[in-house]
Image (cartoon, rainbow, N blue to C red; front, side, top):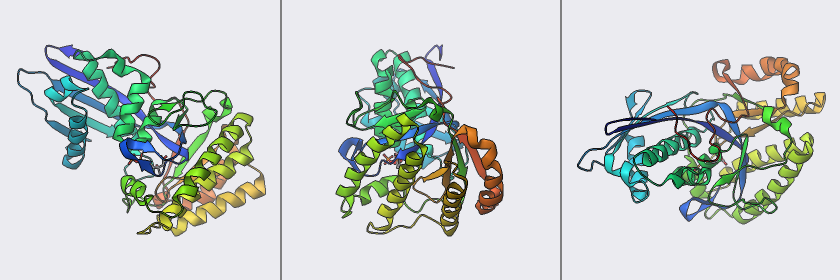
Length: 354
Ligand code: DP6
């Protein structure tokens, strides 16, 4: 953090995450219909720098540069958000902000830039507010996660190292619908899990996540989906405690397929899977069946495959990935990532970094 005269600057990185139990459907104020849990990624992150100039008169302006280019649409979205937070972040709101942001991963590749982007931005805004005289309590991890949730639901999980659980969950002390928490007692080997993203298509998504959540209102399967997600959550946590990878693979894949099934049967209906996504799924399942290697996939709200597997199988899977999955990827593109603490995890009280 730099504080020269009345110029303040905050600079943060925040990771993306990939959900194992999916958040799909929400109530007012970004309250999820069911709990979700995700792996925090290590190399897929957003790096954001926010500059604030305090002057005598209030400014309230927001300008946002994505990779050095002014992005008005995104700027307007952030201005609205900051306006809704103007009481809490009064110093920042009054000064106005200039945001410079960059993602470590390409656009439209099945890695959630809203999770990393919104959590990085929230960290910056909170740092600035504290530096300008605001309440230090805003920097508590619960508060950071909570503001990230308001910006984009899944972003609240990105401030938790390795895996973040968001939503009231039976048996998980402290779990709640407002901010994400870590989960103790899961097998440490998941901390070294791989997530290779097979880019089946890099076209822009035909339905935004926000529109997708809205489609759950009126979906005739909604109530049973929320029940099923809760059931999956308790089964998954047990599988992760016992390191039961067969069960882990089964639940994670069911979650991915349910997410897409819900989109297919909502009105209007969306099919985000591509023929090559289905081909990849077939090949992954066949590989698992034939080799006994516990490799599985999950999907975001898009066609790209997140291939999940334990570190110990990295060598054994490399030929399979090269020969069977890379040919399905657009321009052979695969992004190799893994579970991590995130490039700048927050622990305990909020510390600002340059
Ligand atoms: C399919 O968090 O992007 O990735 O709260 O409207 O910003 P908003 O939605 P968002 O939804 C993520 C949906 C998902 C599943 C998940 O990450 O849990």
